[in-house]
Length: 504
Image (tube, rainbow, N blue to C red):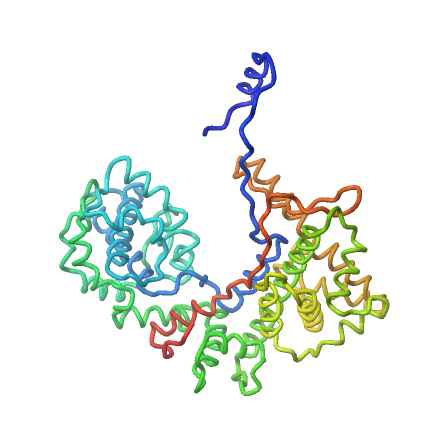
């Protein structure tokens, strides 16, 4: 339903002769990044695995989209079209992407290419007409969400990993660099049987049948890479085409993954921050190891703070009325078995700094999965103490105080080290969990309102006269660890032949 203007609302109100029933307010709720802490995690990931994300795990989509742009540019040149006619070029690339994804989806029931659900309406179709209003609406609907080139999928990596570069005249037009030509030539040699089809040899209206898509699928399936594609992808991960940070970060990861007896990405994840006593950092990769370690503790801190907010909301939801901060503090101290009258140092020093961050993460995750969430407060308390023990001394260039850097939290916690433990718990609940949440929830809501964006209720609690109250209508907050690109790196490296494929 279209939004009514203020003039229409006032006109209706003036003409009304009495009260009337109004529609229920439809407001979406969101639990994504409730405390505004995740951007720092991503910034830290960019120091060890820049250019990667948690979706783009296969080499072939990179080479296919790069090839589609090259094909579009060559067709434009052959037809005498300007090579900056972005509307025509983008339509051609989008068409190629859909044909590729459609053929893979209908040929393989198990594939983690993005967009299967969005293409559900097409999976049973006998043909796809790439023209008219329906194609235009479908293409526009998936452009920023489920297409391979979308920013949440392979889009950023296409440029960051050097498969495509921006045209100097029109930044929306993408051009394959010279370094990638050999990989694209090798890929094209596999699909010469379809290059004369109008779908790949012309612009404008085209129809592709299901039988054609099935016949084309095998040659471009994600697991059918050419040696040239593997070689180029390896160069972008750890070779001469990689940034120094990515090359060092991925080399350390691969060094850990290549050890005999390693069977999962979890073992790699545990080795990187120094949990595995049998893992020694190779000479020259000490900086990368320190960055992976800092990332892991920041990940744990983010998870701990969001889980503390979840614990707080659970207590408010279970209460018959508002709860003040003192009541929340007393409940947390009791559940975590912390002596609130003793010094905070007893709590902070009660956890061995050598405790693996993965075990602290697992303890929180196990408690969150429980219906009663028994043990959650104790798991959070241990995790926070472990994070404070590993407070970084130097700030990162991207650190922002309003994103609660671990360095800032450590400084605030240590300043209260000799005060009563209840004072530090009060600070953690009020400042790290509640204040962070309210600041980001309200700020994002105002940003949406000013920009005419989505109406999303992010705020989950408010202050009433008697204390804090959970807002109704919200779902139970269940934080999850932020994916850290390790699975992506291992998957890409395995496809490149840099290491044997591991269990993920």
